Image (cartoon, rainbow, N blue to C red; front, side, top):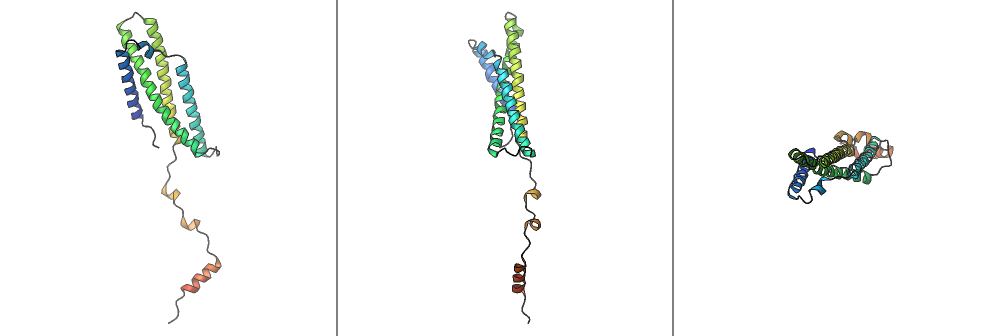
Length: 183
């Protein structure tokens, strides 16, 4: 599995931002529902980022030889979780970033709901920063799950070192059968 490209994550974040911004502009009825974020959202995102980092760190310790009891399935699952975390973080970053941009644009146009707009800006900015932290933590965990590059010299056996010494009986047999009869 290849690592997640930051360019792909940026495109996902921009696409999510466009969809949410369009939804907030078109759907005036559910605009506030899209804009409001509760305090639990950034907390849950940070907990997920910390879990992904912790699991990625255990894979890194295994690769360094400090944690011998980690199996390959757990390492593969950690890599898959880190990849999913990066993609989810990009979507959430786009969502919360769009809320911040639309709220700033609306707030600049009208000052009637300044307290609500300030609350939306603070909560959406906090959530966007935690989503960015999730993306960064996931990319770090993906890097930690990466297998070290192997060189051909390290993987190919050195024949002279790995072949056992022939027994004396074998040497005698080869010498007897390879002698050329005198002419």
